[in-house]
Structures are given as C-alpha cells and as structure tokens.
Image (cartoon, rainbow, N blue to C red):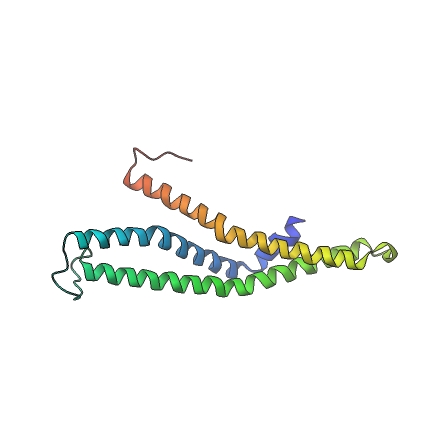
Length: 172
C-alpha cells in the first residue's frame, strides 16, 4: 500500500520534490546556524569598535562592521527567497499528494467491491478516504517542518564537529 500511495507519487514528482528538499536544505541551516554565526561576528566587530570606516564596504576584510551587515542582509535575502520557493512548491505538492492518495484509494475501493456494490457504504468510505488523504498531507507537512530540518541540522552539526573539533566528534 505504501508503494501505491507514496512511492509512486514521489517517483512521478521527482523534480518538484527535489527542488522542495533543496529549499528546505537552504532555509534551515542558513537560518539557524549561518545567521547566529554572523550575529556573533557582528557583535564581536561592535565590541572591537570596528566602526571607524563608516558604512563603506571594505572588500579586503570580512570582519568589518559594514561587510557583516551586508552579509546579514544578503543571508536574510537568501532565506526569504528559499522560504518563498518552499511555500510555492508546497502549493503544488500538497494538492497533488492528496489528489493522488484519493484517486488510489478510490480505485482500490472500486476494485474491492467490483462484484458486490450492495455492501459498499459510500458515505463512510468517501469520508475515510478524504480524512486519510488530509492526514497524510499533515504528516508530510510535519516531516517537512520538523524531521527533515532536524536531520539536516544533525548532519551539519556532526560535519562541523568533525571538521573543526575531530577529538570531540562522536559518531551517531
């Protein structure tokens, strides 16, 4: 049943789902790790009183106050664009997912009761199909909001620890 409901949908919409996963992969680490690193550099540059050159961009130093502000704005811009792309792709993926699940469940139900339509409780069956499709969309939404970003953050943190602190790195 999993193959007909989900695997076939993923196979038929590979490009859309791949773009969606790329948008999630851009949004979450940049928002949670990149921005905190940049804010740390910003506060460190303010503490050093590195404000002497005003707001002229200095392309030789990434740690100067104007450059950090520029990087913060650029990173926020990337995050906003990635969030927009993610929401835009969701507006295509979720309706297609619910329609695919409803179509598969409806065809399976018709095939099951092909010989004996008298025992089919139409209202109850349709209600369960609609509810199951909506709950499947909710589960997919939870995975895209929490579990996929959690996995990405786990990989990012483990990679960071492996590169910067190999003695502290503990494999999963």
